[in-house]
Length: 332
Length: 241
Image (cartoon, rainbow over all chains, first blue to last red; front, side, top):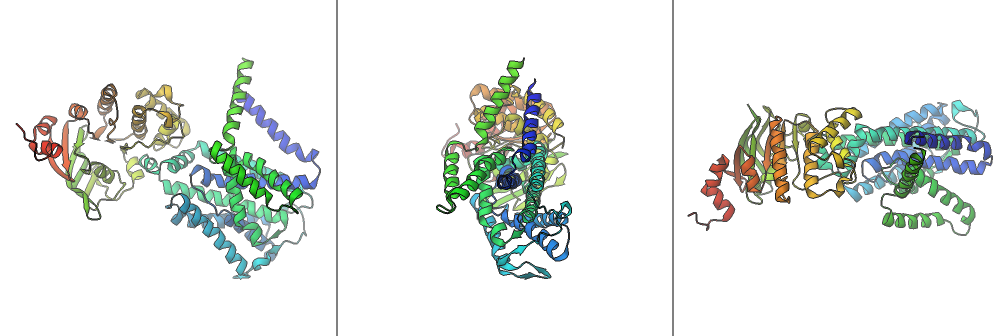
């Protein structure tokens, strides 16, 4: 088999496994954990368009997640609009917000950009916590919104069992990974990387760095908001602390940094490693050591930053390529 | 028609006039050298031409069009490319990747950009190293890579900011040959350089600036014999005998 065929075979195998998993794994608890794992992999991959390719560190993506969650929920609960439509509308709103945040903040460098985005995300949370009615919309302040589990079905993105959620988020994850793959090989991907690494040199080579970053931000916030709507329909209860929290923004960045920023597989690897840690530490140590997973994350992050600055994908990609080469040579 | 013309260009940083009333013109197909002691304002002049800073006053004309407040990326599309005195490779990426960033300015298609980039790398004899990480290159190769990236944007005018600084004599000779080839392929070249041997051999004309002002202009021979130039470089006390 040639290298290309090997890669295709490997990819097919992974797809068969992930699509077949719910047939073997019947426990709703495990499916729930997997749905959240894919959700975080999806969120981090969306974040990666800005945080990885464009070389900045946004720490306010929970705001976009919240915009998505609240838009679809308010429209569905109060007006009966299908969450699928609310999802797209939330994405558009988040996209506009993302560009408005990006316009002034992309001029800032390093930590200042990160701080500005934290301030934006937290400002948003505090605002939502303190507002009951936003114009005609009832957002119910800190008490949050519940979605009554009636009229279940695909049209309302609501199901009584976990499997449909599993497949929807899986398809979303595959789609966002495909988008990232194509962008990384396109002119935009080259321009984002160049502008992130050496903005002055990139500009002299014809790259409008600020515009590229804004395009990336618009896409990233759009995709993040879609996940917000999905999460709202999945948990059927949202409140500011759950969908616009700083913890969420940080966890996305943690996963990206540990998995490997700017690579395609990095966010997935990061989620694959960190999500189970977080879930199982909550299951087994939730009563005695709440927050244990954050300590573990912190330690892993420190170790990764010291020994593998490009994240866990670095040694794994190398091993994977080595394996492909060996198989390739053997078959010749 | 002059491809580039500066009219009374001034760039002030606070009270300091880094470029102070500089006027010059380059004809198409020429090599113009810009020399001057450290801090004379050479790189600042380049930055004003390339759109990094807007000039404080005066005018920059590129291909007959006033380009004072245009941005670097727009000027690049119009055919102006440059290298940096302190090289700025995209260090985590391969040489091919670096050059493709440049060639993407003329095409959206990846295959075309790659083809163009490979051709440029081959012309600079860097094609064997195309997959190397650009952060691991020697200084001579980094300088060549800077030129390669700029060439991939298909420039009409190329600004070279000290591309020979830090090179060994054999590497300087090689670079001189590279620059001659570029001119023969129809690219106008404006270069800043401290290595006199190179700039004397290459330039059709040389402009000398000191404290942001032009103190002399002429052929390499005229400039080398000019008393003001010798004084600017060696100090007032240096007697010419």
